[in-house]
Image 1 (tube, rainbow, N blue to C red):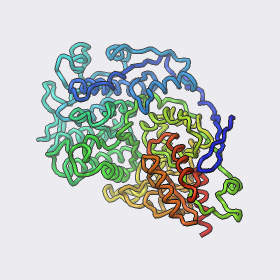
Image 2: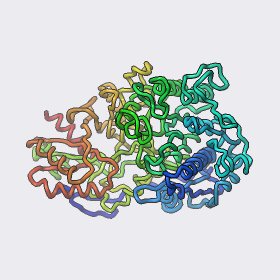
Image 3: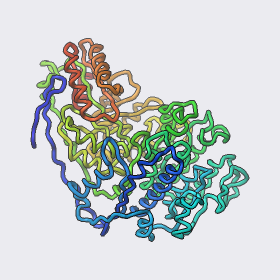
Image 4: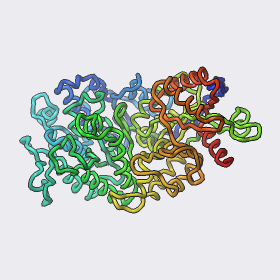
Length: 629
């Protein structure tokens, strides 16, 4: 290994690239050829032009469904669409998988010229079309559910000559197997009378009627797979698509969940105001429907854990950001997390910003080894003393110890886009970093975790993000006023344990309490067997022990390096000659940001001793300091 020496906060740190065993040999089910489709032009549409927004929406919805069906059993269709942080993301991973990684090195690739070519090549993978209603946007999410369960491609009803619906039905003569709108364009879901094909009375809301109909047809009959759900914005995106980047419809994320026959939904978690996409519905109906959906999913999973892809669509609805509503974005996220946690649901939080990803249905076939070891070494107590972390008498030195929680990677999309950029930053390795990567992200973005471990230096450590193998509220597993279900703690432990073991993670970087209330000692004790080395906490007053495990509350650093340095130095001065600890959380920052912060601390902190340390040292010193009290 090649070694170099750099300074960080006055500390000499050795760095080294560490080899990780190559991926296990590819499974025998690699296809004879992989087809590719270049959809990048759809990122360049003018979202203020309705026809262009519609073209992007309709095309990507159909492509995502086709991908989900085609890639269900083998990785056969790859999409070029996403970019982020200055990198053509899908292209980057394609090149890596066919080059350095080698998984796809020997498989021929054939580009598809257009949508018609894709439909022709994969004609045997779908049975026809499901047509949904533009006047009831929720039917777009229902159509994604239908796509996975009935092998149908979703298309929005639009009889204009240039529309995709016309191309598919009148020119390609694909059969419509299910209408979520009447063939003349009038709504099937009206919010009046009874639900279609049912004796059940209407809820009074076309939106909610559509979900009630779909629950009965797909979840309660067992046609949806247990343990999978997807919370992505419905076709109401078309009303104000310019509220976010051009890929924030997140349609490209649907493929994985269609492949797994998930139930799709988009409902407000609030019961004190009507949702802005359905303002005339009875107050609280969206929220009650969300609870009904989660209970049906819980029953389908027989009390197991439920993976819920997606995130509250706060740029578009349910918050002040969406132009209507009285709740801010973070409280809306927290309320949603509080509710789904009570049903054993966890988020894979494809949140606003870099929330779109493609090809997860393709990557689900990536061959992972049974275990990946932490590439960076743990320091010994002797090394702590040599580096000045301990006094000559073996006590924790009177300094501020800072460890960087590098987040937020509870989203496969954020991880998928950030890793190609941040792991090529030449400043990486200069400062110890605790990369907070939820290990469950390997389900949808396995190459990103594999790449991170393979490219890690001895200053790159891996801890989980919030709240382990998925984002939920730990206290929501035991305190359940809205679901009244028994504790889900044992199910969560059984879910987390193998993920922690595979990725050799023993620190839970952020036990996010959110709106559910403080995590209890019993909940921490349940995590202790596989997270014995540390807990990052939410609302604690300071460092301590939870269930015998060292813990420290996270503190968010400002975005600007100068402001972040001020926060750190203020904490150092406040320590007043005693050992102090700062579990410093930052979001989507490149390694050069941490290097610049370290440089700033060296310049300004001569009279305030600060040590930037790795996460194992950080929590180990907390354990020692607590024993000395």
